[in-house]
Image (cartoon, rainbow, N blue to C red; front, side, top):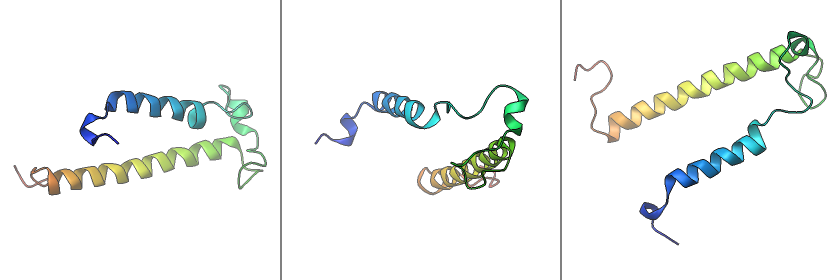
Length: 93
């Protein structure tokens, strides 16, 4: 097994992004459409609330992305301050 320094991170990242697009982020055949009528359609049996409109699912996903993105940003800033030698936010330096 190679050392972590020997890993080609750009290749690894490209492979991961490709996998996520193919397996996770690809458009669902039954899912979202570009028109507003599709947002009024029920989510369907694959979701916990099958009778809820697709717009509520899109809104929920949007809130989750914002929520988890804020958590990641907070942890990133804490790690930079703790381990990166940077001044704490608002510390004036």
